[in-house]
Image (cartoon, rainbow, N blue to C red; front, side):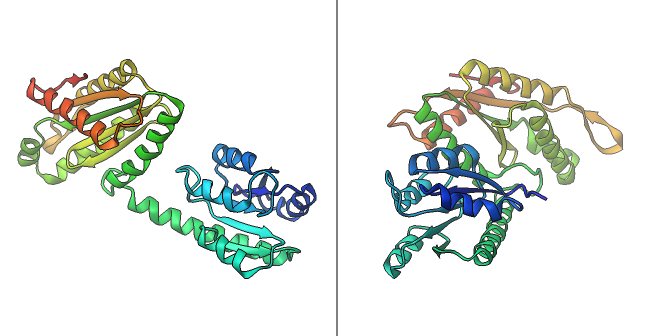
Length: 298
């Protein structure tokens, strides 16, 4: 049965690709590239679980490919195993120092290749699980501040390269302290969980991400979204939260409101993520100051 795990095989010799694919295909989904440029493009497009990379290629060496993979947010964590005819210990040391997880010499032994692939795929899964847990807010299940930092760095870079708008919303629950003092902290936790559910239901694109920023504050990141689209989503979030009854003690239902700041930007060479977040946070403060339960935009 074919696994969902994808392996990118990069080699300029098609006979080597065929040899690897023949005994790996029954277990893995195999995608291929025959030069360095194609390898980088394919890796960013398909995000394979592991890359088998030849070192000696005509246009770009495997070492150079690895450097570019490690310098790109989308591919930097993909494990890379060099498969090469080079036998010099210095070449092996260089490959490992650049970030490869293993180094297999040709002619290769099928059993060894399979075993090492399986080992590194398992290790990658462990790392992903740990990273995911570290980047999730335990109460709401949303990404936490660390998860947000990782995602906005990737989207910021992509928006800068492709000259596309990146929308950002920051929202804060109005009068949350009074709510907690009145109904108790367990009820406050239920409110935070409800807000998280509303955010997830309001966002329809897989690329959009809602985050618990901290306390009673949340963020929404909207790739490829201009200010009109960002404001529209912010207002939909505000209305959905206001229209959702929260069940409290004795089955009493109440409604809560949020204040929001929203902005959109095409990141320039001199723009900084921290300044952008600060600007949206200022817009949120203005929404609070002007009476709450509203969205403030530039």
